[in-house]
Image 1 (cartoon, rainbow, N blue to C red):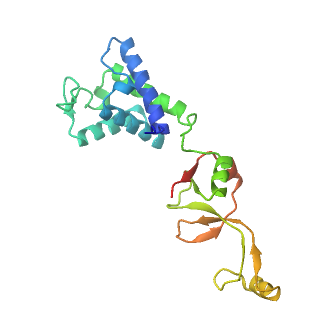
Image 2: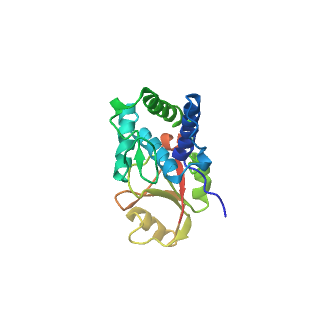
Length: 219
């Protein structure tokens, strides 16, 4: 069985978790487990925290804490003097202003790590244009994470020699083809499936060529 490659948010969450463990131990708290041994709910919480920070880069540590607390309360957690996964109690389920300075610094450290790494760690699924070009030439669909339109992807339409059809051919090209034997060679071309559910000819822009957020889509 092939192990799943971690996403960017998971990689950053692991670093945040290990840094938090080191911070706790430097302050006399040795209860934190390494990422590999941490409970799945704890790892999932860290990943969601990273994703919140990436999506809300201008928010303060208080917003980070509030998002975490909202997630916990929606899952049934309540305030308790000790952290207990079985009882779903946690001492940090209180307003940010009431947190001990030690806990507030943990939130600030978490945000700083995400801010520093979000542009440095490349998700394994992301490709540069050269890699995407090889994929599209082999018949794969490609897309950019930065495209806002839902369901967009690009393909390479293979070139061929064919009879001009009513729907595909420009009228002038159709007449030219008919005058020269009824067929005409069509060269390969990039085609884009748009968010408007139609297809258009597509030429990669400079931004597309320099981008490193290309994804090779599975069929």
